[in-house]
Length: 338
Ligand code: NAD
Ligand code: UD1
Image (cartoon, rainbow, N blue to C red; front, side, top):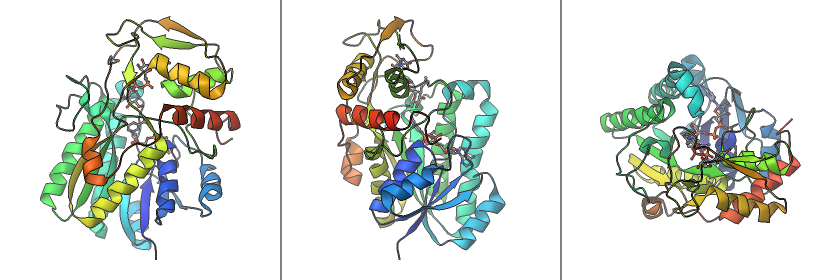
């Protein structure tokens, strides 16, 4: 019998891709999601890709009674916890809502897991915990100085799960710090569909390519970077998904606490992304240079060597694949799953 893994937030962008990687690795994903930022029709697509429909529970991770029922009804080998809110601007406007969802949600989940005797947890953290780093590439031991409530919610969860694992050494916890996830499954059947106007670069570029916006606004070209535009570590979402499977496998071998960067290990500028997208799509991406976006960091990228050493994982898919796969998804699904 294959191991069942509870995937909270599994209907979302990274969670849905991780369901594909889990199924490919012989696990049995069971998705729990409240659909606050996703669409149930993703399950049909997952079934088409994997030939297996993931189990489904509609609900909120803060609902302890629901979690107790779920753990009583299913023998779970572990939990991958994606459920959370991720919009920096919203977190500034509603910090308590963000702490409730992201921090309290994780605490309720961990308590329900403990009560059920499930002690293996992979948590979605973010490179945003580093804030404005002193240097790149960033190693995991770099200081954490999150600069907004979203980033602090991730850091609080990291610290409190660290305390919890120290108090319960039988627990197996992985804190995965994602850099900038982009791309889509190569089938073009699942991908990222932001609600409203996208804040992030790749979804916005995709929407310019299909004519939903006439141009991209480049947020500043006077940074101390090779072409003056912001530099980030973009990592293909399927590489990220496979990183979760690798982390789960490692946790299944031994108890402990892992804190790992998941990134490609190199930085790309806004204009490099735009040019690669033009090559992948064959469309011109019009852009205009505007002012810097408040709160933006000029440049950062991961030192992903610890993840390679500990998990044997590294990102394999490059910028061209990220753009080609994003474009295939965008073209085939201009309205997301609708
Ligand atoms: P997403 O919004 O696509 O997925 C999150 C999913 O969680 C959604 O399906 C949403 O409906 C669900 N959800 C939210 N709150 C919930 C709750 N209380 N109970 C049940 N379900 C809930 O986002 P994503 O990009 O897939 O991100 C997944 C995780 O990774 C998040 O925790 C996010 O903070 C983290 N992360 C994302 C990025 C990124 O750039 N996408 C980077 C670093 C970290
Ligand atoms: C943002 C979040 C970060 C989150 C990450 C997820 C902020 C301040 N940070 O990071 O917490 O973890 O998304 O991937 O929101 N850009 C443009 N024009 C656009 C959009 C973006 O020029 O329309 C530039 C940005 O200035 C930046 C780069 O593209 O240099 C990447 O931006 P984005 O995709 O929003 O990611 P981050 O800012 O790295």
